[in-house]
Figure 1: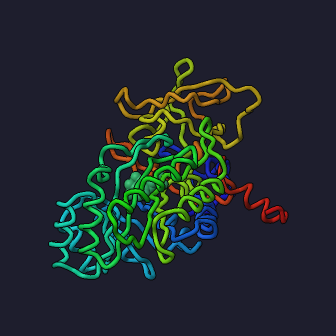
Figure 2 (figure 1 turned 135 degrees about the horizontal axis):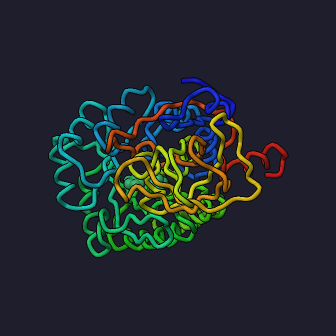
Figure 3 (figure 1 turned 60 degrees about the horizontal axis):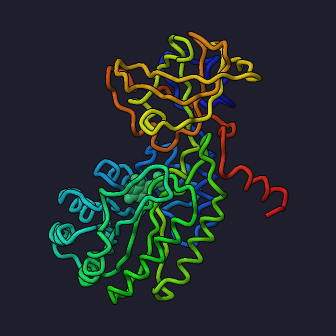
Length: 394
Ligand SMILES: Cc1ncc(COP(=O)(O)O)c(C=O)c1O
């Protein structure tokens, strides 16, 4: 893959008739290194957020060795890499997936949220006695921008019995939850950990692992979370007060926070109607969250020759994606130069999480060029931290 110093050089070199995904592996490495150093336990990467081999390698460079795989495809992709340990944290999965994970890839960790899944795992692994079973409990998505409520998680009134049942069938027992993606406040983790502690008391069972799931935030315009240190402090304080023994491990499974900064996409403007631009990527491509969740992403406009367009006075624009579906609309508003028009390009930043992995080929779109960029992401949770470390302020 070609390496460029910044988006301008890509635009000068490559016709953006297909959108170009710009990978910043150094940003993934920096984020992962931060988690390895600051999370008071083991960090598993949730592969669903971004499965690019370049990004996965960048995370491994930073010391990430544990991966949450949620499909047979993710299992086989990560399973082909040396020195990795996989965990199946999907609470409802097929027998075939469980058996392939257990027998062919040596996976021992499986999540569940019901008696039926517990029996399925036992059956598919031939009554294995060496399992790490993780009971996923339900919790509200009170503090998150993207709710994960409803689909998974044992209800509070059923969890103690399920925890006891799983204890009998596991060598190692854990409890996990997911408070929703892009948690805007650290208090969410503390609240759920206190409730989980009550569940453990009610279950009257020893627990070996507490897994706080994903949900750690990234920076987006209008969605500026507090520093990640506050999340670590909240989790550490709540974990220390839990009804668990000294040997109990703490795990997390971030997706977004590790990779959001590691990709941007350069798109071309194919047309303009008033304050709406028609671009060549959208809701069915790498910009799912911009359309379906109405998120705003950082933008920088360029001429067709890669010259940054004057950004002194900006105007609000909505963006239409390339397909014929009216839902292919990104309301923004995206602040862009008022004179922008056909042939100009826009770099849309911080789409590394749930960007490329969401792209389909509806209407024949969804194909992207790729390039590696060595400059900084448009917004970063970690750059200040790095600067502070360099200047000895930490
Ligand atoms: C089981 C599990 N773990 C981790 C994650 C990653 O979450 P996030 O990207 O919010 O960190 C998800 C996301 O859906 C998930 O389902």
